Image 1 (tube, rainbow, N blue to C red):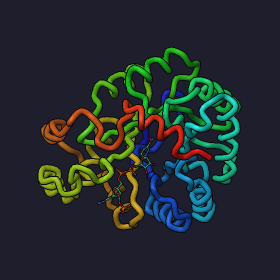
Image 2: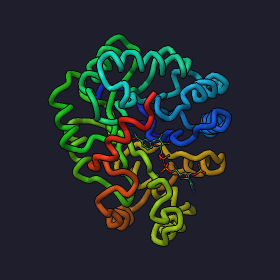
Image 3: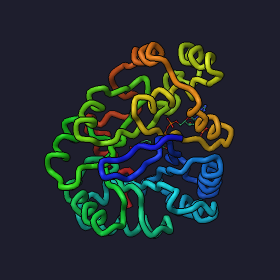
Length: 282
Ligand SMILES: NC(=O)c1ccc[n+]([C@@H]2O[C@H](COP(=O)([O-])OP(=O)(O)OC[C@H]3O[C@@H](n4cnc5c(N)ncnc54)[C@H](OP(=O)(O)O)[C@@H]3O)[C@@H](O)[C@H]2O)c1
């Protein structure tokens, strides 16, 4: 396993474990326990996933050393304001049973997210969170945030996989020293990614699966990955990507897969924006 150093000097694992769409508390707790025993140290949850308590229970049960773990959670749209962020942070910390967070992210740049970010800057300065950042910020939004705030986001978690590669966004993140983190590194299983003939053929050379090739491709271009699986065997497979490298030719072959847009979400659709404002309403 490799690590990246964030723009504030904090060490972050290049691979973590995501728990989106694992609403059942028992399933989530077991999955996080399995992930930690497999070797994952970064756990990525969110207030909106409804499973922070289960993640917290697993962390406690695992007996893992807190300093070795890297726990991320996210602020939902309904709390997107200065006061909302202060309240939501406290709630998340309590649910997770933690005294501090490693990374707190704005889940969607919607509502009064600059107000929310100001609150997060204060939490960061108080030492309650080791790094703060954002998600789903396309280049123009990220540039605006970086030019507005005092503490440059350490991370921008965005959709990044072979079918949506976002090269311009990565270039901008490099310019601002914002670490890219891939959500949906498997495109949530779309595009036949696990059985793609080219990925399978590349993997066969190294005794690896298409899934392992996809993760390796992203980490090799400097992107942190947080694959999700509730199956231990797949967690093991997904974590076993640190003993091979793709050639430049293979990296370029995969670069040609890009269709240049998401087929999972459309942040530019007003109906999607309205749904995010309401879907997880409390
Ligand atoms: N910031 C955001 O807005 C945002 C949005 C989406 C996701 N995320 C974060 O990113 C994480 C990852 O993204 P994601 O969960 O959406 O999707 P993903 O990791 O791209 O794909 C997960 C899917 O792949 C399957 N899978 C995993 N490993 C596999 C393997 N080796 N072979 C075959 N199938 C495999 C899983 O099934 P099984 O579980 O049945 O194995 C699941 O259906 C999330 O869990 C969450 O933490 C953040």
